[in-house]
Length: 468
Image 1 (cartoon, rainbow, N blue to C red):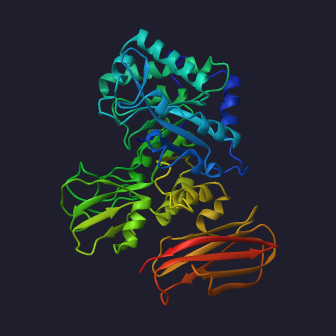
Image 2 (cartoon, rainbow, N blue to C red; image 1 turned 90 degrees about the vertical axis):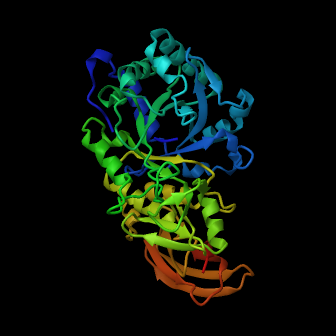
Image 3 (tube, rainbow, N blue to C red; image 1 turned 180 degrees about the vertical axis):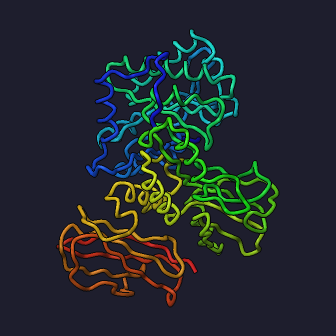
């Protein structure tokens, strides 16, 4: 799965009615925080994950919108669940109800990578009858099942589909606009502007465009490499987040508030002797949670400062895992802010679940939904208590960051799993705002530690993992 405002071409009559424009503005600013610079966080939830990651584990206070993936478009415009699934497998009213209680939107994602042939999209787009059926069926599906909108993930239209794709999205836009309540429309795009995308006519129809800024290396490349490098590594350029986003920005037809950047909560395990070296065999995907487990089992952590990404190597130097962690996510959040993009799409929710925490989602939300200065770790005015550390897992040091809503006397201590005090990091009066302190564990054994912040009559605690 992969995810600006264009000049409008009047031949499609795509200027939305004023009431829909106002509704869209309300939709975009629906997050619980009111900072003007907040960014929209969309997380993709794969319905096959229900047993391992049920809706009760979704951190609904760390997200604005859930995109439930995927349903399949058939050539005649009808809809089906994925192969091997039933509507009972897919539909998840409990999740939708819980999300709505927490002011989180839920949209239905249509398509996905699947068989790589676009499912029924090409035939739907080429037929006026199928386009009308598809648009009507999706509107009714949303209204019947309480979804808040539609996300189209056609991977990928070719040059022959270009005009028809725009016509299909116009039909869908018009159908959703006629619904009895506001339904959003978004789409995902690869990390390049392919020949099948007429963004001049598409952008005005869409609430956002999610760019899949990941999968630059994988089983389809001859060498190992980073799944989602922020910047290209000199001499090893399969693309990067920066090259993709710059291309979209230079198109000059996509306004930055409509352009969303993709975050990967997974990586790949390459059978390779090192970074950018020839690979063999398959390159299975590895969730962030699994990458943490590999570190616990003895794999070594490395940081590539050019790409702003981490990677792991095994003890025999025959495998390498590239992925994102809390440090690389912070760099990406800083980049997203610097480019003034509208938000982020995440593939996928639950892949960073460590039981007691979801570090990548928590880091993403914290960095994109607090004042701009927070992204650069400067002291700034605070609105509530915040407590986190990065990187995590760490070796041998990590930075503990906290935010005070008022001037307070602060006590920050670290404990081991038996509750024994390890170190006092802060024991003094501090001013309102954001602060950070480094915890060095080089003289301690590997394992889980807890840090506890006490200030203004309240206490907060979090766990962190030290891996030698």
